[in-house]
Length: 515
Image 1 (cartoon, rainbow, N blue to C red):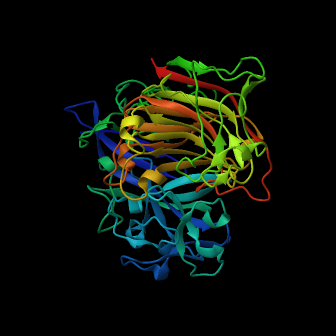
Image 2 (image 1 turned 30 degrees about the vertical axis):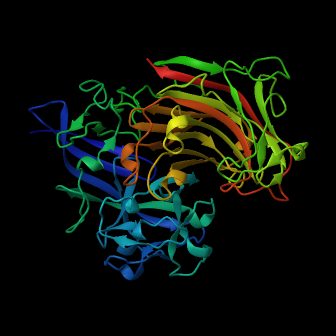
Image 3 (image 1 turned 180 degrees about the vertical axis):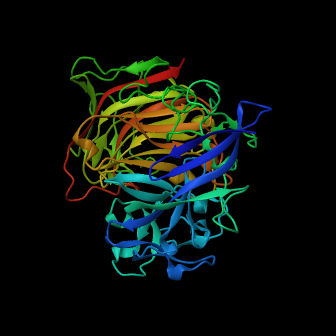
């Protein structure tokens, strides 16, 4: 075996380097030899000087994770181990066990403990940037955050699972304190510092993982032990193709990488667009959009009645303007009685749909408690498969009570709360998204769906992230939807701070296919 250079992965507060050897029998393959993972303390922003801690420096299954004064002990040392699917394990290096959502629970207040590392969804987390170097530690199975219970500053306060809410009790400061080097086979278990770069620890790069094998950005290629293909080692968080200077071999979602903002860049062909450049006061182009109408709650106990025509959706100054208002709403009947709000919901069903590609819209969202603007997609087979069997890709959603965050989510059929919760990631800007226009996009290909704001990737979904019993239903054409909902189960209803009317402005919607 000839030694090849070390290849590194860096994603959020993660650094993992893999020393690899090339298989002389197949120069297009790499074999994993060892892995170096960075070890961190996680201080809480809510209570400076306090850290994520294993109670009593315990090493037994079920040891409670708590908040405790930062003390530099092994009880507060966590190695970040990439799982190859956009998630990480947090390995407590003292106990050689993983941070775990007890019982794989999804409810608020669920216990967080240490448990033997087992590769289940209970131990998978996403380190989601929350501004100023801090991260949220998100369990994608529940789409909830690690949270200091009750924002209590006292030593011994339990860390729990709770709805992500943007508070300081859910913001953690990763401070690197060292590293561990692991070798051998299998995932972290028993003995020493325990993990390896087996196939599940390699970074997933989509179906084009070997597209530039042997060219710039080497070394790259599939591991010789990986049966599923599509894994590679890399030097940046997600693949953008072989480039000079040690960039990666691979691709994201089966196509070229996006431009910094507004369009996916080279390697794409525009297949559909609406620039909303009609005369002021005109309706949307009927060859491109249909109206959904009614006030039945839309499965979410929403409060609005969706109208057709120009009452709530109109072209003005090169934008589609969707207005939610109380004026005149009482003439319509909603599920709860006379309606309180009207708005609009437009879709391209039967007019345009596409399987895979790059879908983007430049939007300025509204603001205030109870608003729920969205740009999203549903599978063409919704008439026969229903929801969630048809699948849903939410390119952008915002709820007014989290003005600094937008969400990208996939929904599909599966067990328990998965259809409703889906697999969701958030982009946290640090200032309200309603302050201006932003480009919201999804790059979608076989076995991967990536989510962008202004050209920056913040979330991706791959089949291995689905819980047991769930089905990947994203290999068919989807149509698009633009809507502005009011109230409902997720955002909550408007309150005394909400002002009306509110407007959602859409500059354009564009769809591309990879060349």
